[in-house]
Image (tube, rainbow, N blue to C red; front, side, top):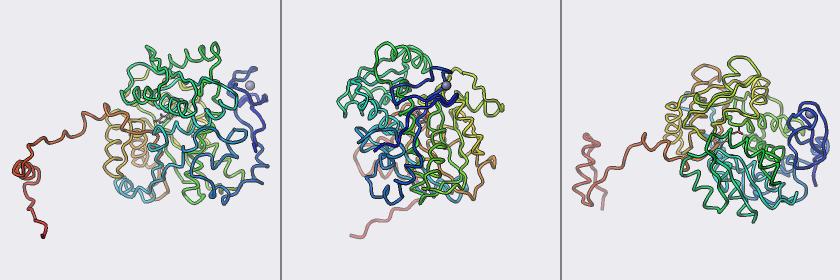
Length: 420
Ligand SMILES: *Cc1c(COP(=O)(O)O)cnc(C)c1O
Ligand SMILES: [Zn+2]
């Protein structure tokens, strides 16, 4: 049973029935899903959710599908890792990593939004699914399309990392690399979507797609014992996940699943592509487009469609945002790997480095609960870190060779033989 009432324009309030629509015909504002929250409140409970499978559909009352989910049956419910060692390194007490780097099936937060979009595309009867992507979205759409038996076209900027390109191609979609950056890809995809009538998950299915992002926040709250964290830090690219975290928290409060204890939300961007942070720091709502130049390609969107809504959500929550250099991003990747054993991509390095900066600035108090969202996986972007990690020591297969190496590495260490 569905609690969706329909679509509504975020700006002028015009209502629409459920359809593959994303902009208001009156004012070009974005359309959002409207729910019957009273009905949801009567139907949903913590126990009911706890009894369901560990995937993102456990929150189905708050997701925009009719009937049974048709995709993403194994997506979501990623670990919330208690990060003692990273917390110690940053001098904070209650620290958690929400680890979407191990999301099923394509190892990023995008498996959430794509699960909902593809399920909805199948309800609408689309046979071809597509997306404009910085890499992770293409991986996820291609994987989910393969599982669902749908035709698939993915559009990416040229020059992406091998792991992102092969990580789509392996599923057998048609991959089209556009000579240009993401903003060029996105512009072209709007035209293709209109002309070819495909389900573009982040264009004409955007209202459904973006709702999937709420599940990242739902899980954090459930995994903290139905409590909001006091602070959460997440990267912003097009500006989907951050405002949807805010919306998700509000919904949990509205339907009686969590108490309104307040959660400050912080946006993280790379200094080489920080249009949202620039606007936030200037105190304006107006996001001026930039030309991206950063190793964090999955969040390199110079003209973010949802930028305005990120700023609104950050301000309303009492949070803030910061940007960090590529060097700080690499340090962030290594810090997370070497304290928590989690290998993230540059977007995650950005999230770590920005969190560190906000703590050092005193913006995030050290004694309060902090969640850092890790949104992507480092095995896809090996190029980014290849030059900044140690090479292997290559030796001959003799004990003497190893003894010599060990002595070089640890000149003061003795060797204690195992008792036989
Ligand atoms: C897409 C993405 C984000 C966030 O993007 P939004 O468009 O702001 O939702 C963050 N991290 C990674 C790794 C991503 O792929
Ligand atoms: Zn409108």
